[in-house]
Length: 337
Image (cartoon, rainbow, N blue to C red):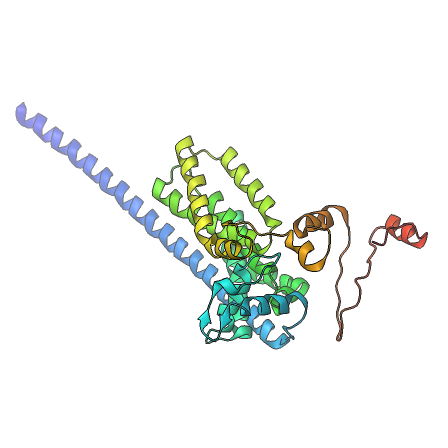
């Protein structure tokens, strides 16, 4: 009787062991397949990145534009003031209405072995490649997964066709936009179950990116603040993790703002991370604050102004897109200030 019970127990035990081994084998196969799929996705993303990098770099080099025009020349020259015969001196950065990080970034590229144009081409291409190969596809998940390579290349091609001048010239558009999107994307992708150390590091890097965007384009601050508030309101993180996130972002922002703080202490007698856009009126004798003026332009005026040609840049002209505006202009009742 005892022997039969033992034999029966042994049979049941063997069945359980076989089932467990089968489950583990299935889990292993599933993990290998998912791992292979992840590696395949990464390879596609990396391929898109390098294709876009090559495409944009070739575009910049083949355009070979004159980089000493308008704002492009201003960014290059103002950063050059920090490099004297004795080396680098941040205290030589002039009093201005813009931040110091983008001009300094351009100078470090210019003085690298790559030189101004090639260095600018490669770094701009890397930023656009990162956006279109890694960040934007992450918002779609598995949607259009089979066509990601073509979609990424198409988006980059359309960008170059429409906004090519933002990378042909040393302008701040791509630089500021890249860091704003990257900073916001970093905290959007933080999961509520993430460890405190991961939240701290990611949020600190996000703070670095958001401050760089603000320092380059002050008006971006409002968009960044709105995005961070939305993330905090709708996040499933507990209160303690949210405090860690906010604190880490502030620490990251403060650390990267130190060059601006030093410049402000020297020029404005204030150890502050703020960009003094009101200096626009001091330098140009205009009553407007540049930051407020940009907000007014963005909210009130439906127009786009550009100039293609040589010689001196003429006065900006109106491009009237709405019939009502055109009629007001023809009737001489449209303000021309």
